[in-house]
Length: 188
Image 1 (tube, rainbow, N blue to C red):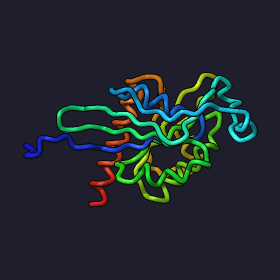
Image 2 (image 1 turned 135 degrees about the vertical axis):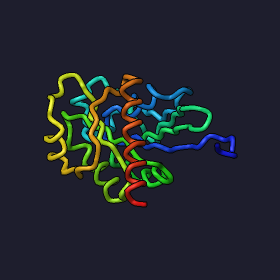
Image 3 (image 1 turned 60 degrees about the vertical axis):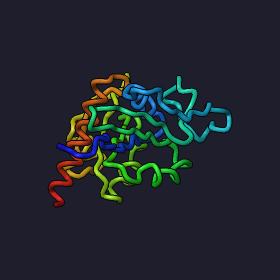
């Protein structure tokens, strides 16, 4: 039994490209009203932010999203959603500091947009899971095809999920925590 009655905080980063569902995941999972730093897409973003695959998108994260999940009296998860555009990547080092790992969301219609996030976490040897967010109209690919297209390490978990579904998001977060725990056990 733990002597300290305070819950253990675990920081989890939700990352990925523009419009892949990071804010949606944080909103779906947070037990508190999530902190969202959404800014309206304006004419200044034309030619910068490609909304072709997400034509109804009218806003974007400009700093971070934040949510909280109390697992039980001993564990609290803090979710930090990163901005997706490269002009905001300077914030990623601060957002990821102290995190247990990351969920890298990907839209298979725009798989190239997840390369920077995958590279970021691989370069820092930070545990992450690749979460394929099922968008309407996206093609279905096998895990092997996705792993090969992204040159993912064999031990990097790939999960198929729906960022709008609490159960799906929860399964993704569990996969990340299990992966991080496994990596910690292997390294020690």
